[in-house]
Amino acid sequence: MKWRRPAQKLVVGKPEYKSIIETTLGIPCLYGEVVMDIMWAMKRLIRYFVPTETPELPEEDSLTMSQGLRMFLSRYGFEIEPEMDLYEHLQHLGRHLKNVSGIDYENWGTVKLATAFKIICSHKIDKSDEMFTDDVRSKLLDDADKYKDLVFRTGCIANYKKILGLNILRNDKVDQLAELVKVARIKAEHVRVKPMLNRSLNLLQAK
Picture 1: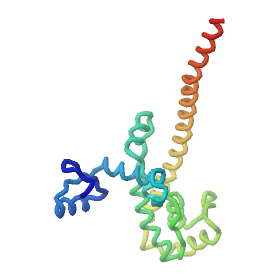
Picture 2: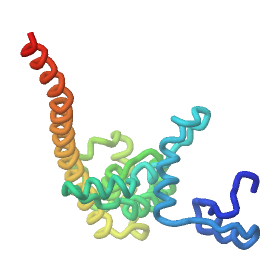
Picture 3: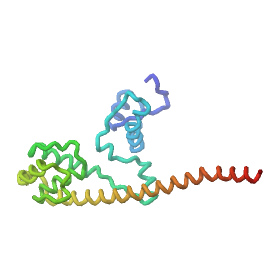
Picture 4: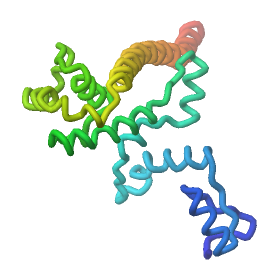
């Protein structure tokens, strides 16, 4: 490769790339958790460095958090529980919404997907289910029996409760984080203003 020096390793985004390149080209490659974290960051920030590149991150990548941020938040008691497994599971179940009821679920988040299957499994609408249109709510109720052999009722309701709990916890943590940021800004402003006050006092004393 033209721009690669002999001692350098090639960073790749997938393990199969590493295997193929090392086998066919004999170029040592680097792949791992740190590399994936860097790749994730590059996808999010590339538009700032290369304006012509505007990649759209899928929701699962948007949900992912950098390891550095996860470690930083952990120091302040913010333990972030990954939602990826639940999200992927719900996305898999979401296909049934399209196939059975003709409902377009593509842009739905985890809470909305979980709520839809909660309605299907419980055969009832709650006040908190107003996120759906009347048409969608009717379809979910009318077609509920058609999902009997497609979804696990107990599991869907358990997922709904878990995701709802995570959502409440997230909102609480967001409020706490906002308060920490507010305090940090006040302290930063104090650090910035204090030298200015000292200079003003020195000038007054000099007079």
